[in-house]
Image (cartoon, rainbow, N blue to C red):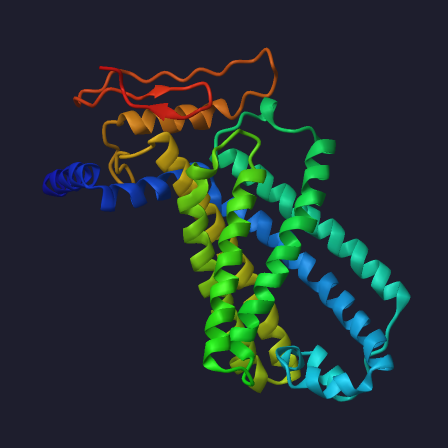
Length: 341
């Protein structure tokens, strides 16, 4: 056991000296401190419930459109939408009909669930950036911002998804068109993540501080969209209506959950890089002496609980036996500057 403890401490010192190991571990450590998995699950809950009202709206609109333009029906059946369980058979049998009541109910439910997605995302981003509760927008302003983001980012995400679908299931398009669709979709995703990271956070954060995470999130999300398009176009296509429905539900839940994790991990990487919250001590199994980054990260985590303007939370650490580099100074904007000479 003593030998394991020595090797464990040696690995801790190694990862603190090497950014390629220490930085990812610091991101994962802070993600665990911020309960990122629970935030991702909340976003997934509202995102999942937003999908089905949107599908209801889509099928209702298709019912209205196909009544006036029957020549479009075969083209839609041959598209990715025709391969969806439940919707595909209804299209094939020509049994889709428009309903004003279904359209109104679908839009209302999609609006409620969509606002929930962005409210949960705002809460998650404020947690990652350590914004105290007392500095966050009140419920009325938070919902107004969520509605604005739903229109702005939701529309952009829909456009990016369409471009990704054209590149994966558009068999009639050439290779150049598919590559162009992927490139445009990736660029649009990066821009949306960059804008979303900025608007979802109550604290003033510069665009430059968010650039790296936006690029990483955009590329990974594009890969996830491509895999999702392949899943719809090649797996669900051959499934029965019943099992295809189960596959669609499980696939959607998994896809949204992974997308939420990608988004939050990319945002967490921005926080760790901006605030210099690394290297952290590797205390997963055996607690190691805290580094200055540990102290900064845990202090930020504790100060989130300030809920009143006249409340101040302070965090103290006993003196560490390990000699550490001097802490960075914290500016008024929450960033950390190099120590003064």
